[in-house]
Each structure stands twice: as C-alpha cells, then as structure tokens.
Image (cartoon, rainbow, N blue to C red; front, side, top):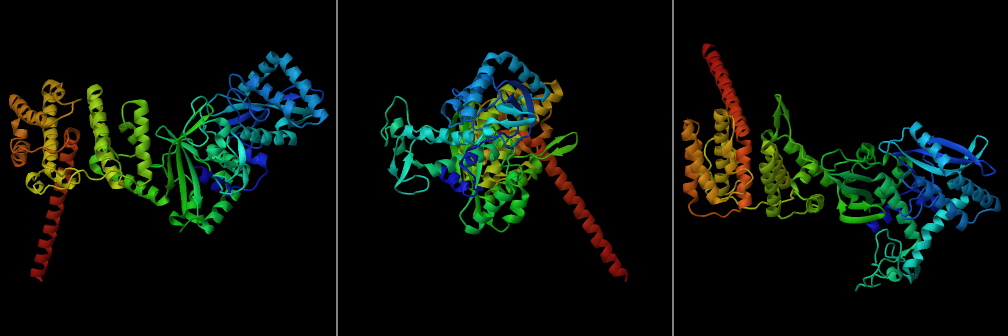
Length: 608
C-alpha cells in the first residue's frame, strides 16, 4: 500500500509542503463558523461561511489538538480550538504583533467562553448543521472592518503545520540509510511516520527494532520526501477515494506502469481533480464503475488493464487506521467480468421474484455476500472480507466452507423466520451460481455417469440437467427431489389445515441420508392421509423411488451439500414447475404454428 500511495502522489499536482499536508474541509463538513476578534484582540462576533474549499486543516490526535487553529465541531471543540491556538502562540515563529494579538484573543476567549459559545450555538442552528448531511467547524479569525483573515491562512501557521508533521519522526529514531518506499540510499530515514504503530509499548519483539519506539526506523525507514508524499496521497485517498460496500470501508487508489497511461492519469488529476470522488457508499460488484465515464471511455480507452487499482480494506477507530486486507492489482477487466456475471444472474428467470405480477430479478451485491457470510458480527465480517479479496483477486476459496456458510444461514432462517426461507434460498442459490461464474469456487464433484438415468423426464428432471454443474451426483438429485416432494406436502397441508406442522421435520435442521429417506416415506404417507397422492403418484413419487434404487448403498456427499440441494428443491419447486410448463406450452404452440404454415404452403404449391 505504501508504494502505491507514493506512486500515486507523483500523479498529483506539485504543491507547497503545507498544501500536501492539508486535509481541508469537504462535505459533509461544509459549514464554517469564524470566531472573530478585532485588531485589538477584542471579541467581534461569529461569522458564518459555507462550502469553503480553501480551509487549511489537518486533524490531530483525539487526546490533543489539531495542526491549525481550526477544529471540527464535537463535544470538546472549544477546549481543542483554544489549545491549538495556544500551541501556535507558544511554538510558531510569529511576529511580535501576531504574538501580542494571539495572547489577547486567547485571554478574551477564556474569560467570555460561555457567552461566545452561546453565539456559536445560535450560528450553528442558523446554518442548518444537523450532524448528518451538514456538519460544522470553527476557526480563529482576525476581523479588520468587514475583512476576515483566518489565522490558519497566516504563512507562519502553514509553516508550523509542516513543522508539527515532521517533528514526531525523530521519536522513532533516525539514521542514514535506505528509504523503504523510494529506495534512495544514504538519506536520513525516520521511524515514526506510519499512522499504524510499528512498535509495542511494553512487549519487546524479535524483529529488527524490537518493537521499541526509538528503534522503529529499523522496521519502517522512511525519508522526509516520501513521508510528505505519502501524507498527501493518503489525505487525497481518504477524502476522495474512500467508500464503503457491505459494511466494509475501502480505498481505491489508481496506478499505472505504462509511461503514456501515467502521463494521462497525471493530466486528468491536474485538470479534472474534482471529478475524482467516490460516493460514500459504492458497491464495486453492482454499481457502475466509480471513476467518471469520461476517463474510462475516452482518456483511457484502449488502455485495457494498463490502468489498475490498489484496493485496500481498512478499519478506522478514533485515531487508529488499520489495514485489514488488500488487493494489490484490481484490474478493470476483472470488474467487467464481475458485472457480466451479475447481469447473467439477473437474467435467470428461476431466480427472479414475482410480486404483484411484476418480476424482480435477483441482483448480486456485496450485501448479498454479507448476508450469507455468517451470523456473528466479527467472524462474518472476516469471512466477507476473505471472500471479497479472493473475488477481486481472481482466487478460488474453499467451496465446502462457502456452502457451509450458505446452509448455516438457511438453517438459521428456517428456525427463526421460516416465512423468509424461500427468498433466502433464492439468494443463496443465486450467489452459489455467481461464485461459480466468477471462479470464486471450483466445482466440488465431477459428473456421475448415472445421472442421465436418474434425472427424470419432468420439469424437475430437466432443471437438474440444466444445472448439472451442481447436481452432478445421484445423492444431490435425491435431496433436490425430496425437497420438491416436501414442498407439495406443505402446500397441501396449508390448503387443508391453514398451517404447516409438517415443515418442522426439516426446517432449521441439517439433513443426512437417513433424514431424507425418512422424509420420503413421511411425505408419501402424509399425502395418502390427505387423499392427494394423485399429485405425485405418476411423477415425483416414482422418480424419487427410481433415484434411490439407482443410488444403492453409497452416500458420498456432505450433509451441508445435501441440505443445500434439498432447500433449493423445497423453495423453488413451484417456480421451476411453472416456468417449465410455460416453456413447454410455448414450444408446442410454436411447433403447431410452424406445422400449420408448412401445410398451407404445401397446399398452395399443390393447387398451382
């Protein structure tokens, strides 16, 4: 990640050091309040400013203050802002007039804090600051007549910003050596650059530097030039190239090795900088490509994968910023493959939901993966991240673990909310097929040659043949057909009794061979009890009996896989049957029309 950020910094326009460190104020922090003091240092009221992109601001530690006399609104803003101003007064290289004025304004602020902050609260309401789409910040300001001069705009304040940024580096030790980022040798390198600690306070380690702060330069030696470059690139990425999908925060940093593409990227960043902005929520699996279409379709047309991206998943808590996972090479071609697979799943009629006679196609998103990744917070988040990294990186994961997660979700739904099971199964089955299309999982089994004899000539048999990629073993056909059988029993029971106690035999449970065999017998018995065997006596019942005979005594699939096949049959049997019936009728109608036309043509020829 560090190398990618350093490379990315080379594409950004050349600017003074303070500008490279400036984080500025971007939406939702678009409402500013200037604490104004006149030329004598007396209180002069609160001035309000909206959408100011010239603010000089860099955030500091939560237990300290920020790098300029400008702070975001929070519970301790007054104290934090005053502390930043005192720090500037004490340590910056100021003129005597500036120092005298700051001393007076600080004294006035502390003496009249309550009254001043009442004015801030009034201005806050007038600006419509609500902590959501509009957030605020306050800053120290010199008011001369009607002219406002923010203290953060003083050249001395900007120089002090750079000085504060560089000062902690020496605490991690420094020496003459090789920078780990740029590779330059015999330069002064520091060890306290990283926003992620490379040492521990009380537990010496075994790597170079022993996790001691003063020896950190031996773990991550960074020169001053690279430190500024990384800070600038990180600020840009954190404010513009940061987004979230499925509860996972990420950065998307472009890079290129081809000289022509690098030059074009630098040109675009210089002239179209404001267009490089990700939405707060952007799903890379389902949403359109985040960069402006202008760049993908025009400036970078024909570049292929020469323009690539570094995808970094991270977690941010207070001042801590921790990398959780990384995809070093996210290629545009891979995004196109994922979107194509998503469109293919959306076109699958068996996966579409029908509500109020309107078909709603299944849309695979990161949230779909998240819903199936597990039932516990931290574990499911880790699983989701593992899946996403493998998916974007074109790597396969363990298919057995993937199916287990899907089945665990369906079992949990069956226990607590059985009314949602059909929809959840539709999503799980669609996600499995998406994972196969994208190479996230490989096929578990090879096709058993007996399948041609086992799959019946029926709507369900044709469905098994169509999806033989998964239904490749006799055991899975049996589980699927048993699910279809159980669905018919549940439907009959609902009509007869307006309740479905029979479903308690399998919902919320993992199923094995014995369970499936018993369910087959109980399904037959229950339909016989209701006098409804006619529904299956010439179709499902003999088909399932034939499949059991062909299988014999073997059973080679896991309980998870068998349960998944059963749930697909149970949840989708109605839609499978009616889709097949509709296709059959359409085919018969087309054949009838074609035959009629052929006869009419023949009769015309004979008459001539």
